Image (cartoon, rainbow, N blue to C red; front, side, top):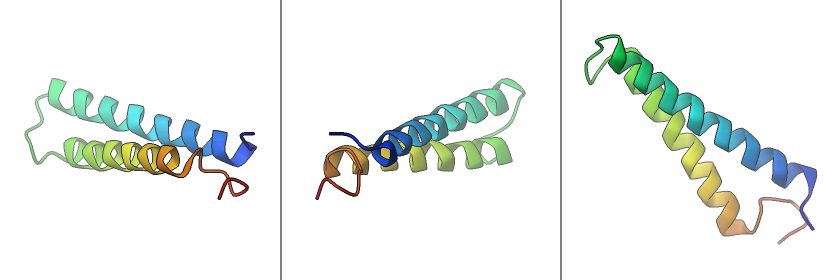
Amino acid sequence: MRTAYGISTRVTSALLLVIGVAMVVSALARGGGALALGVVLGTLLALLGAGRLWLASARGGGGADER
C-alpha cells in the first residue's frame, strides 16, 4: 500500500523535474548560453527531481512503511 509520503515524494520529484526542464528551455529560448543561470539552475533542479524519482522507485515507492 502506498502511503501519502511516498505519493507526495513522487509528485514533488516530478514537479522539480518539469520545472527544471522548463527553466532550461526558457533560458535557451531567450538566448542564454550554456553557463546561463537559468540553464545551470534548471539542470540542477531536473537532475535533483530525476534522482529523487529514481531513488523512490528503487526503494519501492519511498514510503516509510515499505522497508
